[in-house]
Amino acid sequence: MNIVRWWRTRSHAARFDLGIRASLYPSFAAVPVLAFGSVPADFGGASPWLAAALTTVHTVVCVLLMHAGINHYLGKGARPTGLIAAGGALTVAGAVAAVLLYPDPAPGNLDGPANAILLVLVLSFVTALSTAVRPAVALAVGAVGCAATFALARVQGSPNPALPAIGLASVIAVVAVVYRISIWTLRVVWELDRSRQVQASLAVAEERLRFARDLHDVVGRTLSVIALKAELAAQLAKRGRDDAVDEMLEVRRIAQESLAELRAVVGGYRTADLDAELAGARSLLASAGIACRVIGDGSGLPAQLQGTLGWVVREGATNVLRHSEARDCTITLRPSSALRPASGDTLTLTMDNDGAAFPSSEARVRFGNGLLGLAERIAGLGGTVAAERQPPDRFRLVVQLPMEPAGAP
Image 1 (cartoon, helix red, strand yellow):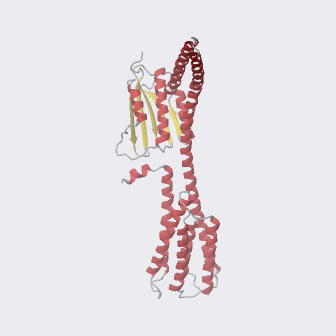
Image 2 (cartoon, one colour):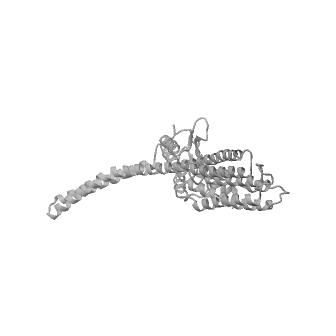
Image 3 (cartoon, one colour):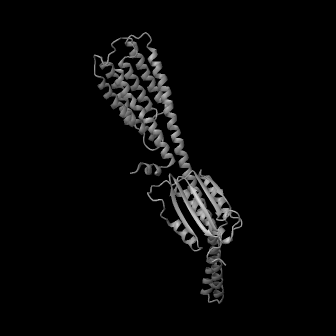
């Protein structure tokens, strides 16, 4: 799979997530290198390759622990207790092995192999652990490691055994805090992304509720009246009263009025004022965290054009919310004549956003149901609809209409 195309399919939050992880994980690769370099070439004990091998196994477990710990911190998985136990056991075992396999040739020398290996083992484990547990727990484990470092220096007869412990504590504090802040930032970004999706869903749901409320207000009252009138007509018919016919005629009249009102409500949603739709699109997109800029307005346009373009803006804004990861959207409305629109001019409405988060080797876009309905409606007025992707992540919807639509009086 093309890596560029795959990258474009990722949301902005997912890209940030990948960037954070890519900056944290590789730092652990330095642990085997440091362990290998800490053993002198003329060291009489075990080979430096053994130190590199032992710390490599420890590093792999720490990277897995950090990966699972970040997922747990983000709420995407359980706490990796097994990896925590494995990492702790390998840290203790590696420290013991370092002391036994690489005895300090010059007692009291703080830069011996065992000291260096112990430092990198404790540092890497506490750093990985800080992503999976509370900071206090990680600091407590770090304190144990510092105590072990102090004890080792004391046994080796160092004149200042507190020095390596203080150095390790300082490095742990800095590195663990930096890593913790990094994953905290990552969680904030994911929460913002989820908030944006929720806001977009709420905006669509609010529009549906408004439509449902209008239908209820129009149809609910008349259906209640029809039910009462029909019940009355039924009772009159049972008694053989001629008034039953009049009541049924009244039911028919009310039903016809209700049908007319229902068509008016639906028609109101299909044809809308262009300026109102532009303002609504700006507000709707802003509520979802998308910066919207509108260039031009519908002043001076025929009513039929305003209604059609208002429907285009509504459909386009809905598509931006549902099918993209956009951060900005620009709506441009201009006639072919820059000075004064004339009857022979072509009016162009463009909706451009940076949320083309889907793979395709083709520039043009296959129309879904929404765009197909839009194209059919525009074609009936002698206009055209085009949608295309533009590298690297732009999506553009272009609608062109004659200033005098086909079929206009």
